[in-house]
Image (cartoon, rainbow, N blue to C red):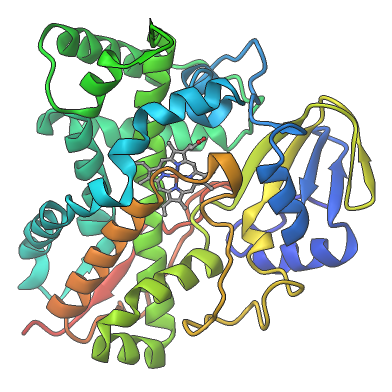
Length: 385
Ligand code: HEM
């Protein structure tokens, strides 16, 4: 059996795997693939058994950038690092950003509202999260375009999995850029996240330079592509379901639960990696110590044992315990921010682009990655007011 048969529509493949081989060893790569909800939840959250240190002690390529970041550390270091940034991402701090996010959304839509058609990924879903995270990190506006290129290349590198060892110009370019930025903030601190991290101490120790770099690149990648795809996937789900679209138009208060269902139904992050610390049993299979594991979030979120009619997009689903933001100590730090950005973006789209629908004959293409799930472009039309 192949691991990912059709990257464009992986859901039928997941369904077959949940039934026939829910914990599956891919002989070629040596990685174990996990498809059922309960098993995925265990792999994501039992950090003593399933380590996040996927690069081990010798990471290279894109792994190098994240080697010292939250997402690739285990306790106790993980807890210490995470405590430094939780404040900035708590719902209260994030809610304070709402007026700025709404202002940026308006600016972006201003440019297209008088037209009848646009690619919503390019015009809104991509730039909005990049600008928000850049502002949080104090990155100058003129450098944003470079950010886009870097995060695209890094996401496509991670496609090869945790053992991918591609050293390339992007990684060193990014390291150089952030080193210069860190240096500048050291001399002239501001109110941005990088200055906060520079001032932070754990047991009297400052963060190391690799740790600072890890934070910067993680925030850059984690905060951009994923939120872009949540916004894009939400528009796609609504365009496919005119009844839901009509309901949300009449009652925008339904948007938060609609977005939760989008997160379940078309999860922006389809899979996460772990490494087994010791031999362990999972779904009846014996996983050896040191084995790489791929937890398929996108499959867990469609598990018929957990969700009724999982292949149906149903905004009334309650409870909706999807794993789109992970589970346990690594639960997505940016979840409140992603939810807020997506809600504001969708509210604005629905209010300002009446009659929003997919452009007739649009050929939708999924981004080439088995990890992230989103569209390359989202051509839509509407009737200008
Ligand atoms: C819809 C958008 C997003 C999705 C679907 C998403 C998904 C995830 C997932 C699945 C994890 C868990 C990783 C694991 O268990 O190994 C995670 C972790 C993380 N996310 Fe997000 N994310 C999103 C947006 C964001 C944003 C906007 C930010 C920051 C600005 C962010 C920052 C992080 C960080 C720092 C971690 C690591 C947390 C840790 O290891 O303790 N994410 N995200």
